[in-house]
Image (tube, rainbow, N blue to C red; front, side, top):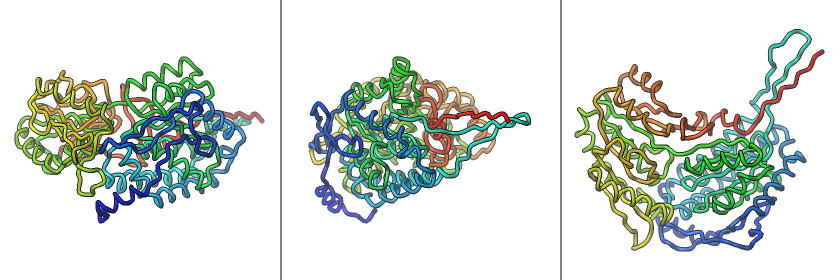
Length: 496
């Protein structure tokens, strides 16, 4: 994929037919109101296509389709082997359509097409394959009982799952939700972010091509305050799985209480700390990964290592190494394979990031970046930015910016490092750099985070659960534990 030239990607992009209709009951349909909104390329400001603005009526239509599909057993009633075959075919189709899917995400939200083609799309295919392979390896249980009694514990699908996903990894996040939910037999109504709906809509078409029955996966694009709210309040949705901001996650908890007490699983905000100790064996590797941990995907990552704490005795040396790495991240045309940073998702997010930077200039010391830039005179681009001497209660250190902005501070003792890292409303991820095995274990136990990465940053795989503590959310994506969100346990007790 790295040998594809800039003109190759641009040529392929020019050949795309972009469609923005909703996907309900196995086919593309306009919104019932006929209303559509503009889908904008943040790298150029150009119009990609018009996208159906689904409202409560469209959500109701999608939920009814999903419920009918679930109740008649066209998917939920299939054997694990039959569902597995469809999931594996879908994984193959994702790989076969890699170029198109990578371009859709790149054009839609500004990510580097190389990242989409080498990370996001292959990763999505791998996750569908992983959950497909897992389907026929899940066993029910027999509980220990007195003689003459048989207590069986069965895992059953919940019914209709509403999945609401963010814009930073459009295809990946759709996959994280849909793959395990579909694997156990649920029907899904997927609401992609209004900024990046195109790959989710294409995924639904590929699912039909793979053999998923009509109505099992429906996609309703639209705005959160309309479409997302309608899904959260719908009385016939059994479960909501959401990735996005903590603020919106709390809204879904409210919607559940106002409607049918549907299960709500949340993967929300983060302000992940990265702790660099003086006994780190490889400061160059730590600097490489510290830069990657905040500047990859333009910092638009919920688990981005956006707080950097460096032991004071090595702070000057480490900061010099880190600032040198900033030069490796230069905003450029996302379709240019030589670019190392893409565009921010839209104008609103760009202005929000710049608001934090402008305020940070007054409270901390700017040592790198800090400017909004354009590429070919256009687009939403922000330089990789580093602030040092950031106070613990500074907004730069406390609030999720969701952009390429790193806040740096120092510590002198291990206890101080842990206290600083844990003093946050979030608990999604953390990283520790040390050659001391005992310290690695001590801090892994003390840090309040769903994932603690030692001598790396933001480690994840389909085999390990991803999610957080505190206001970073409830429940876990990925791994076999994701099945816990999308299935219910039923006890069948037989006395004989």
